[in-house]
Image 1 (spheres, one colour):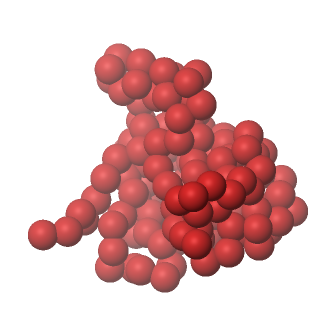
Image 2 (tube, rainbow, N blue to C red):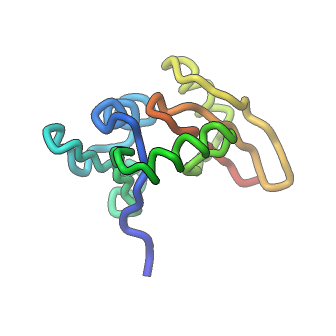
Length: 126
């Protein structure tokens, strides 16, 4: 088995859809704004794991999202071939980073805000 779809709670699915497609470069899998339904996929793996940009309207979802953000914990990690290059690309688009590219024994990582209540990590294995 492999993961087909996973949720990322957002405070505004329509805004999140635009951020994930226009800034990060994900592709639309399904977008129904009137239903607050937005699903995106990575262009490199269109048949891979899809992200459901799900409204945080359930109290548990909102609490989880706010706690993760408050504790500076990313809710997802995206693989990048070159974190420094992706960092520069996203900075040029106006994306706000809370952590610049940092090397550790696990690789190089950077963390940015998705404008919808989450922190996202980009990671490159060494």
